[in-house]
Amino acid sequence: MSLTQLFTVVRKNIRRIFQYHCDWWRPSKLDSRLLSCTAWRNRWDSLRVFTPSQFNRLPGKPFPKPVNYFPTKDDVADYLEEYACHFQLPIRHNIKVDELKRASDGYGIDADVSTFHARNVIVATGPYRTPYIPPFANELDGSILQLHSSSYCNPTQIPINSILVVGAGNSGAEIALDLV
Ligand SMILES: Cc1cc2nc3c(=O)[nH]c(=O)nc-3n(C[C@H](O)[C@H](O)[C@H](O)COP(=O)(O)OP(=O)(O)OC[C@H]3O[C@@H](n4cnc5c(N)ncnc54)[C@H](O)[C@@H]3O)c2cc1C
Image (cartoon, rainbow, N blue to C red; front, top):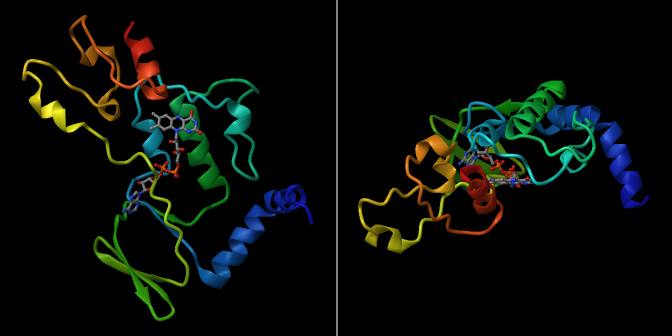
């Protein structure tokens, strides 16, 4: 079976596969946030993803926007929320995992007030959770307002005209455009 055929089979049977695994292994996803979509909802107001609709879909449910449309952060958040609801994914929200320990038949998971056990664990805690602020930030004059992109919402937070955006990646470029 080719990879494309395998992908098609998985896509067509995602609900059944998930259910099968639920019955057999009882997997669940633990997430420290209140909703599946919070990481996206919390980003700055004007954010549009740089991947057009056709590249944002997950298996089994199309992204509900036209081809070549650049979705807003809320379009993405809505889609993730609907996806979890549609497939009734067993996500347990508002549980922060503190420690993962090897056990004889799998892993022990310490999370807030509860302890869980799982035969297999996938760590998918995301790559952008800890803002990087360079050490020299402390040496700048206290009168300079400094903001990391993770705390940026919209131009009203910055009541001055002279602004330096550090970092010419996607976040920096989009925020600079937002401030023009
Ligand atoms: C500003 C910005 C713009 C982006 N634009 C795009 C784009 O246009 N297109 C694109 O494809 N990608 C984009 N990305 C990247 C995109 O966010 C990531 O590729 C994607 O969200 C990664 O998904 P993830 O599930 O790995 O991590 P995340 O979406 O970060 O999810 C990680 C989850 O793990 C949970 N978690 C973390 N630690 C714990 C813990 N200890 N216990 C329990 N739960 C925990 C968090 O609550 C979170 O819900 C962008 C990222 C940023 C920051």
